[in-house]
Image (cartoon, rainbow, N blue to C red; front, side, top):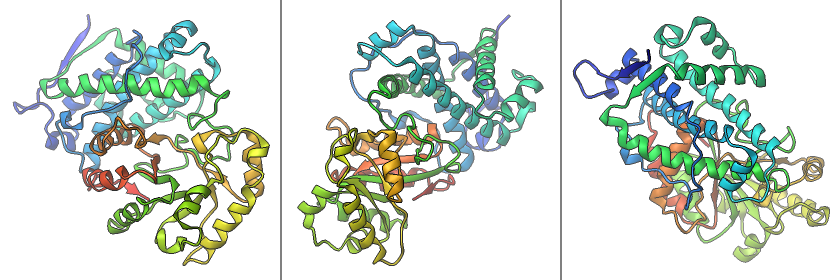
Length: 412
């Protein structure tokens, strides 16, 4: 007989911040119960009509302590897990229809799903360890918990644990307290749209490369969990310099934070070829975005890169410190040959895993804050993409940083 888990926190409103912080067992059982329920959802979602936006005002708790961050992070992951399972249960034809594509690369889709499952399970393991481990969860056997605790990148191990959750969920149920129902409805819609964004990129890969998957292990890809520690986020800015650069740099410096700015040659020429980059980007890392904003998929398109790389690196070295050479290909499109070519120039490709979508006209700075809040909680670490030709980053970042004050988040 299925069990129903209802959160009742000692007569108070369900799951108050104080109870979450002290690791209340009822809250923990609620978390595991919700995950087990969501993991079995298999119905396909209709393709979203717009990009993924969330409404963070519906989340009932603050995010300003490590425990509150971890609890919210786990909740976001639980909802996204539902949509990963939905994709896993689609046929190739169903997936193509959902994504609006004539064909999909199923190898890349399966690869992306596998990598996301490892990422989410690792994130959950961290949360469970923090809040009492196996003893906190009646739904997990000690054997299953130990498997989860020791999870690595093994496809078989990940699949077995994922299947375990799906099987167990058939005997589990959960009733969300009123405190979370509005948030859940919004999060479910958000992650349906976000899954569409992500799986569309995966389905097109490698015919059209992007940030969704690595081309070469040498790439600095935000999705790779082992490159950044937990709650560590690198802020990056493409396409500049522009008239918005001084305000963005000022916002970062005023908050004592740093960012990486990927310079595009035509933008630099338009801004002023004789610009003192060390002064303009005071305290920031300067990197290279290219000599033209085009997909670097053919060798003839990158033959002029060495001279521009040399110019930017020479200017950077005249500053107070030398910086590593990072290169971001426009649109994230590249080939293995380009990566090798850049490696010969002493440059490393840097991608991203969190897209602010700040270039979209349909998203405001406030909406971007909410989108990034949800994705920061979901991913728990990574590289955030902004654009240096947009004003939204300077407008949104101070409030975004404020939301996570005290949560142990590292920004750079």
